[in-house]
Length: 273
Image (cartoon, rainbow, N blue to C red; front, side, top):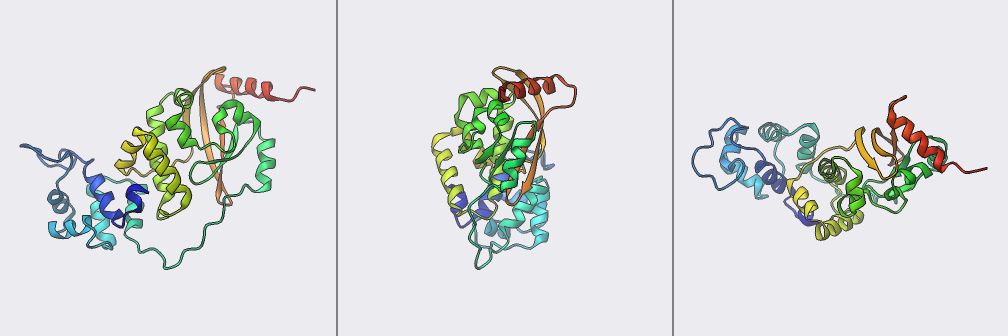
């Protein structure tokens, strides 16, 4: 899986994040000509309170299990948030000798009943953003939410999905960062290997974002979309974990224009008597 299949994942992550921190952000006077856009190795080592030689061993994979204190010091200098810091620690944690085989993702029967009962666009997604099930309102909201679609692939390769998002650039960056967070240490998972390989070949934007090594949980929040019939909608998004999959719901503030538009959409998909 490109960089994640390499043995030195810790070094790759440190190198990528080091390149994203400017000297000014770290409190260092840039001065003179610099060959790297971010911090030099020796600068990061100095600010983290470790020797330059030890940091070089970390980045080159000669020492893959630094102490939690060293990792926290590096995370501080690299300006990592909580999710990114946890990811850094996971890269330095030895994997278990034997991992349980991951079972196929399945949608519990009660979720199918719930999808049919809720009056908002709702669907079930897997760890790699595969759509596993959806209600009629979700597919009317976006045909890319049909079971069998992959949300990240649609976002990066489908022009209609790109136009659907008011801030496509932020959505793409968030999804790619969330994919890395979802992968975690499961770098040999066949589904992740397949998806990252496909997108690495077909999307230059994916390659750029993947090289940043951003890590972010794509949880609930708000989003603004442009529906081809309803126009602009401002919606909340909630993600609820259920038995290894995620139930995703989109809904609007009560009484808002977006709520009225969702109600109109619901009336259009209701079966006619």
